[in-house]
Figure 1: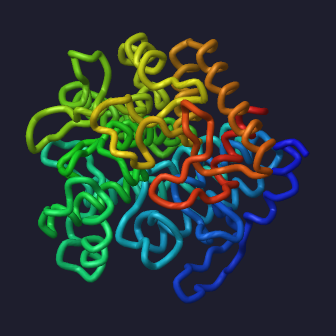
Figure 2: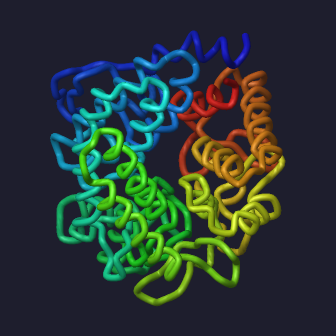
Length: 397
């Protein structure tokens, strides 16, 4: 059996449906995809679903991609934002705002004006959430819910993160909860990108995604004749100006996470710096491609962070390989005109999955970029469908 045959046979098992709320799980109007059938990931997760969709669309599963996106619209309309996942205990945090990308990817193929219209106001609603609930003093955005410290949720975060993140064993409750909340919302749980400073950071990926949202909404407004084109263009221009001022490292020649409380960049070089190129900020692409080739590209794919003494064996660090970062890197290369490097990334990820599938008969959540082996950092590696299959299908098709 090939990987493609395995996906065709097993992907239906990762599609669930419940239209009514069930204990801890929220009801959704349409069938939805989960990352891993029959495992611990039994609800729809936010940013996972985008990278699942990138494979559903070109592989002939457009209707499921539309269902996934319409479900996220429903959640944003219900709660004012898309939570980390569709369970009650995820309500205190969101994840990287990729909903508008899902809408854009589908509309690019279908050109369904009425469907685009049905999502326009909801994208704006999610944008308002980030601009009112996650806005730093410098006008850029951050990950993390600072309101959790004195809550019941905060108690759970304190107990969980103080034993999981290096350096938090002796930290106070406020710092521990804020660090845990930031890492959870970023999707990069765990890593040392934000050190022990949590929401004091303006992350590159988050602000690049919001720049992408602003530019996409300018286009959507024009298509739908909303009359808000200039409003969204001005917002994007303002964000780019702030990103150039704060996040862009003149020393390194590319964007890096910015600690606005201490006026300095993160010491961690990460694949998050690929997001601006992925989303249309073509600022010094040669420097970013050089970092990608020399510091992030390993024999089996693009790793999360550059090898350094700030690696602590956590799952979103060197040398681990995750599906979404392969797709982001691939698209960044395409936008930089480096189709050769994009092809290298695509080929290495497909080969990685195929070689492990030949040995184990399954797809997996994460892999070691040096050895190609399945990784069980922080918890036992779960077999995966979700974004692992999604990115494989995107590269295959």
